[in-house]
Length: 286
Image 1 (cartoon, helix red, strand yellow):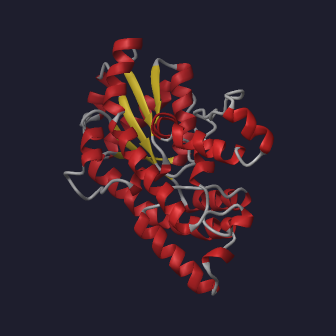
Image 2: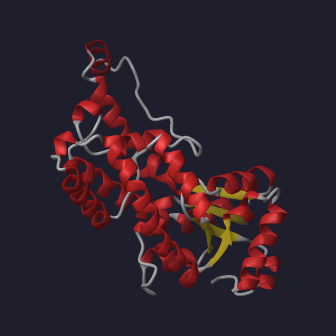
């Protein structure tokens, strides 16, 4: 770890952290607070994925749908309209929409092979966006004068790294430049996230081995074929399993590469000074 002790962290001229954990537990909230109340540069991995690495794919998907509408088709072919993604740090819907959900096309589902192709695109994009972090640390300091840096990672970071491999390229690169910090949720938080997801299921990235096994189990359990799958029903069914699959991977990342804080501690933060003290306490607990 780049900060071995609480004292080293408190005295560091430049404080750099990587926040990771389940989506919905405060990574972006804390990052926004650090950016708005303090002199912290906020690097959003999901935003980088949706703009730099998958922006063209997302826009082309919008255009593909627009070409099915005669009026829009004519305007696109004559360069009379411009279609683009309006993705932001707080609104990643264009990226989620592109990822999609597998299942019946009449219910908005994608063929499973196409779904897996988009999942693979996301995996490559996420790894690239994570490996871009050191360049953005340098860019933040050289261009804008930001010494403090927070990397707001996506919930799927644990799916694209091997936390038990000391030579993992992504984690090695990140840990050389930042302190990885796991925001750990409780069983109550997990239940709340599942209930929230059930109300508004959204596409996610999953590890391919996990996803293929889940898909096969779902088809077998419900005795249905690919074309009969309700996309929302499948992702609802998968979500709780995905959280259980991710938790030990997050824990290994924290144990082998960084520190952990509790979600309730994060929720209580009111200022960058509070955050700095929380990380110091986490280092003292190690």
